[in-house]
Each structure stands twice: as structure tokens, then as C-alpha cells.
Image 1: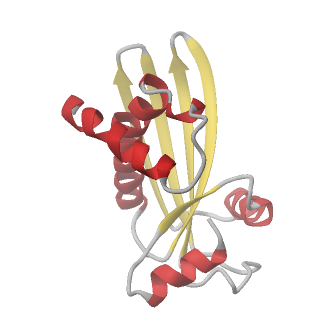
Image 2: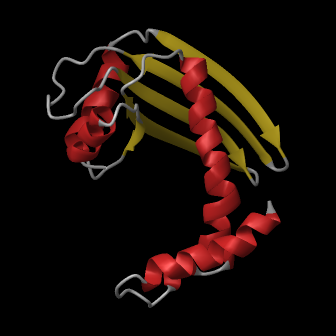
Length: 159
């Protein structure tokens, strides 16, 4: 998500929690560097067992903003989420980074981030996997957005 989007949220009187992925390599590396050398201001650890999955999530919040490009308007927190566990008997390890304009505890960020993944799992997974939205060859004008809305209608009934 571009720096302009952060500015838009702040200018409109809102806050944000945004995932930082490989498409923002400098910021992504910076968050990992801060997490490696700095004690978090807040940490929350939760373990969850569902069906064939066992997941331990460690959420850490940092406020060391030295070295962050000032064009990332409104940043007050850096968040790192480590997910370790087993899925279908296989081990996995995932590290996700976030920025936020909020100052919250790690537990509060954990609840918000996990809540977002509930939406991903319920709606987006259905649209992507069941309805093959990612394989659509329709790319012109408003057609992709219109079809996305139509595909969401049956998904809403599944919830």
C-alpha cells in the first residue's frame, strides 16, 4: 500500500493498520531489524488448535521509528506477528509485519489482525478458490468490479 494511502487515511481523520510485504522492501527490512535488536513495548502470545492445525502466534509492538521515511504519514507503531505451528502434520513458520497509526497493546493488535483474517477466510477464499475469481479473464472497464460484487452475493449467504 503506497505512502499516499497512509496520508489519505490520516487526512480523513481515520487510523490504519497495514500489512507490509515484500513490495515495500526497505520498510519490511526495517521492521524486522527493529524487532531483532529492540525489546518490544508490548508482547502477546496465543496458541490455537483447530482441526488439523496448531498455531502459536506471537505479536510484538515496537515504537522505535528512527529510520522510517517521513513520507509514511502517521506511523506510531511497528508490529511483527510470528506464526509457528503445524498444518496437516507439516511444520510452518510465518513472519508478518505491519505498520499502524495507532498505539495499542499487542493483544489489541492481535485481535484486529486475526479478525481481518476471519474476513479473508470467509469471503475472499470463497471468491478466489470456489468461484475462481483469480482466474477470471475479464479485465476491462468496470466489469471486474461488477462481477466481484455479483460473486460476493452467494458468498454472503454461506456465512
